[in-house]
Image 1 (cartoon, one colour):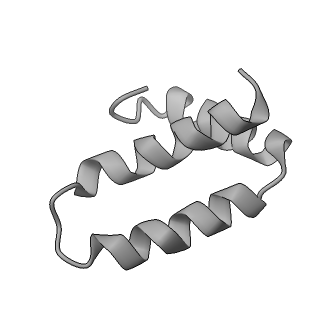
Image 2 (cartoon, rainbow, N blue to C red):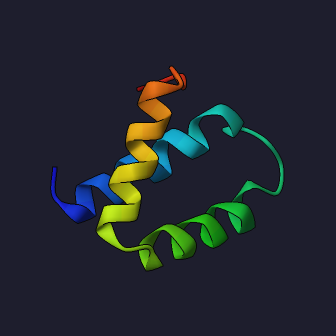
Length: 58
């Protein structure tokens, strides 16, 4: 998985549980900016952590 795909996957995993909540747009924008600024290695480490913790959707 390349860096961009990993970042998109991380964003989707983090946003999925709160879909439909009011005020999501500004939270989503903030989350996207934060994830996109992260180094690729950090994103992959976060994804691995979510998989190990059995996070829904992984």
